Length: 508
Figure 1: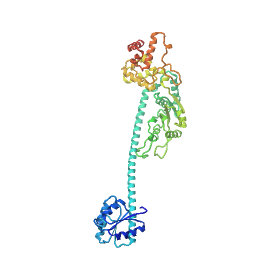
Figure 2: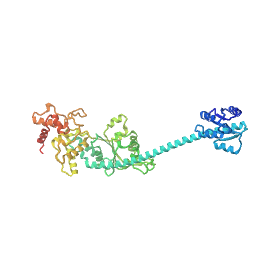
Figure 3: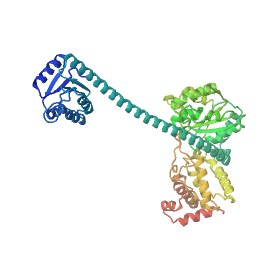
Figure 4: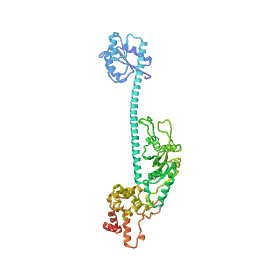
């Protein structure tokens, strides 16, 4: 209610208008007057008074009709109307209330009574408006809350479904990686290089200890999970589970539940107890791949578990004591990330109690022929055919390639080459190598040129024309990934000449 309420007085008698004005103005009302129903309707719509005092006997539309029209107009429907009239018949009183009036005062009236009734109805009107506004606000808030709850239920349902799907996918990937590891085997590290011998010695050494944390460093495709499985298989935990987890693939919002589990009712959509990765790996090994990309929050929680061996599933009243060995792997430089604050130093030291460094394939090119032969035998056996021979030109192409995808890339190349050859000897044209990583002048990280990949200069060419031609052909094949047609174009010769040269050097 405003500090100066407005009252509209409607009466065709100027004396009555003057009387009511003198009664209301001293009480703090601003008084507007009208002497007919039509003029009152226009004035009320324009001025929006707080209360209307209405006589029945008016020229044109009487008071009852005027009240009905006021209530029919949205602009004036909520204004309280008090009838002040000399008509005191019961039927007239009833007609007044039926028309929409809130009170009926009979003339002659007492000033105190009019002031009291007008004030009461103004307060009731004000309270009613506040209540309606409050109800509207409550309804709006209720609708918003209902909508928010609906979204929350949907989100929790999506979260539960995503978690179920992720658990299912993780189980499938775990089984797939197990079968792939059994298929590939630790033979993925066969070779004559001193590096391979050192790696296998490290695996045997750390495998004797069942609780030492191991950090495996290496580029993608170097076989980090194979090493982790070999460590697990050679340890006292070999009979326990091996649980591989790709830290990058775990959504941040599900991470705590996925790693530590939850109990039924822990959150909307948690319809059953769920074991986390740590509990699944109890008495075994938890392999955390791409540990360098783990979020800071999860790093802190992981450190606590590594320190005391206890996890608390979401919603659970008690902790669980677990016996889990953690083997982590990364292709990132964790020491640099520790220095930049992206990775916790205390967690790094906890994980890296023993480290295994896996070399990229380009640094052990002498092992390429043995690996290629191993994979040829593996895939030929699976395809039900006799393992074909790798021709010398094809081996030269393989040794010249940098293999940015490392052993995994070599394995895929050999599998496709076997399909392309149909079981015949593997030739350069069967090797589908990408242009990435093929470079005749490869500079290794230490700044020295890799002699296995370096193309010959004029001084290094043999004096015998036949030998020099062969060297140039091998270089061209290396640079073109075994593409004979492209190698012939670069050399400016017919490709038949290349095939003839290769055939002359290949006793098959």
